[in-house]
Image (cartoon, rainbow, N blue to C red; front, side):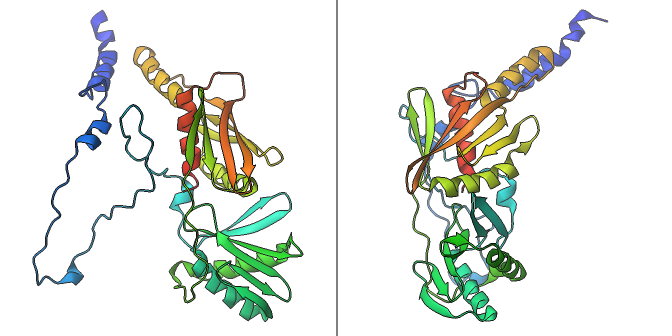
Amino acid sequence: MNSALKWMPLVAVIALATAGCGRDGFYHDRNLDYNEAEENAPLVLPEGRDAERYRDAMPVPEVGGTRPAEEGVVEAPLPQALSPGRARERGYVERRAIGDQRWLVVGAEPATVWTELERFVQRRGLTVTARDSRRGVLETDQARFIIRPALRSGDSEIHCEQGGASQPACLTALERHFEARNIASSAASLAAQRPDTQAPARFEQRGDDWQVVLPFAADRLWAELSHQLERDFAVQGRRELLERDPASRSFLVSYLTRSDRERGFWRSLATLNLGEEPQQVRLVLEAQGPEQTVLKARSSRGEELSSEDQRELLERVASLLH
């Protein structure tokens, strides 16, 4: 066999890899497209048209935030992670817990959940002793119900307490009630509690290390991330949740960093073998106040976790809360 033919597969792979070479760099830098984009005049439809026949075929969602400019270059907004958690239908009911505290998370706005909670109380024959829809507090002769915005936008938390302690039987009854009701399509009839505008996740760099400042209490954040990481970090060899420790508010994950993914790609060009090896990383939550927590990522095996890899992993984890 001609020895030159042995290198044909490698040459083909390299040709495909370099086909995307573009201006100002090996790969096309889309930041330049955003900077140079021009706004066109809006499309004007003829007057007298039937408005019922026209609607947005591909609605564009509102941008929740942009990454900071670095050296004068404004980066395009990050896409939301397409995790299993985001694929759930609205109206779902799930449990959360940390220590002795238990609560429910419902996939609906607090106003809608409040209306359904009042229906639950009425059907159970409970006597209402105090009601404050603005604060999301409904007190009865048997329990105190609290509704507030959950960490993920559009979701709600429901707490059922007595003397400050969670009531498991009450939460079970609530869970069954909400699962049996189609609250995703229910319309809120009261001016109930509206979620306050939360500050977005704030990325800070300290030396070579990155951290994320999140506007949530540490215990609530740990419980939510515990659930979301279990759902999203479930891809063998790429990202996996290995351990979780509520006492230290930390998680141990196995993660194939961006550096390892890129290194594996270029190694594969020469060896035709990916050889990718995920790292074990410790995600740690540190409380900085009653409603502020810092999330950090550190290698657990003494391996160096670059600044770029820290940022990329933290961005993925923070996106699970949107």
